[in-house]
Image 1: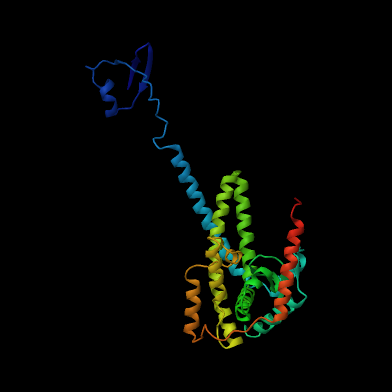
Image 2: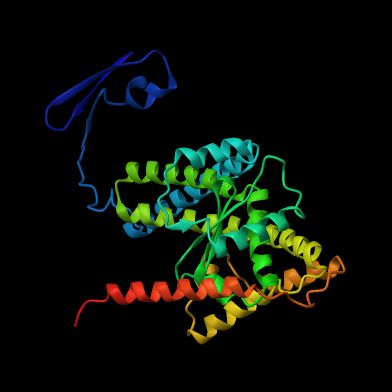
Length: 334
């Protein structure tokens, strides 16, 4: 069956169907005209037909937020994997990493102060069940920085600014045992592994994004995740340090004095955070946690304290004066 459709304007469309009900409206019945005229119009679409009703900035922030969430999850997963695997690396391999890297620091490992600190570290190590191949090496940097830290290869570094602030040997032993605990738990190596993973991830994403602002935001996110790990490590190191302090002196006296002292100094300096707290985060529960842990083990946090030897104090005074003289020489002439 055939029928023709004429479009207004002269065009004719010839259509052919098999016997089907679909053809009936056009040419199945004889009484209907076989030639139909269709009036076709071409209306213009609305100007905003392809324009979203949502503000473009909203879509941008939603997309950016989603990307940051995905990146954060990936970084956390990679950090966890690195943190788990690096602790199984032999300590000798960790020491070899230090030997292959040239670290230029004005640290001294000889003299009255370093010798005293090394002796204290050796004594405390005997109470901390270190692996046989793990040794502790202490060095001192003459600086008014109030800090100490443990690093790769069993190295512990003290700044004279912190040594000047420490009131007793017991408090010093708490700091020393705390840093040794970091080394025993392989925290420096694990932090290196996490740092490498996060650094590679940030560099990769920043390179793809090509945007300094995005790179900065990603860097801040990775910093937050790293601090979160650090607080857990500090808590674990505190527990081992309190135990070592108790074994060494028979009580845990001096374990919280440093935190109280530095907290007081922070208040006196109108909120300026001491350098020690930047690498050893102090929250409201940390001192309470130390007290609770000692109480659970029936350890007293009070007791007779041991004075730091006079020869060590005299040497610290000399080093402090040397530092002041150096600063005076560096002042511009008036």
